[in-house]
Image 1 (cartoon, rainbow, N blue to C red):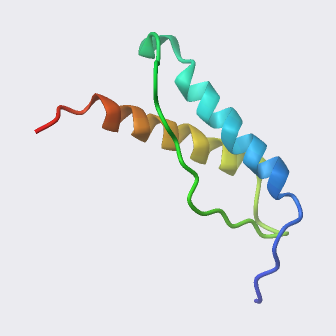
Image 2 (image 1 turned 90 degrees about the vertical axis):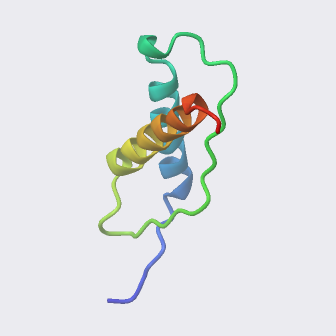
Length: 74
């Protein structure tokens, strides 16, 4: 099957941002002063891509960024 790009990328990017905000606003983190989450690549297909998947990806990316920020520096 050939790749057919989705015209819904802005909606999917908004879902990623919502997932990031959801993770960063969890009360267990307290005050998050500076954390950067960079979306380096995204691919959405007309059939098979869902907003929830992008929201979860943003949520998990923010969690990983927070883990990295809190990791002890060697």
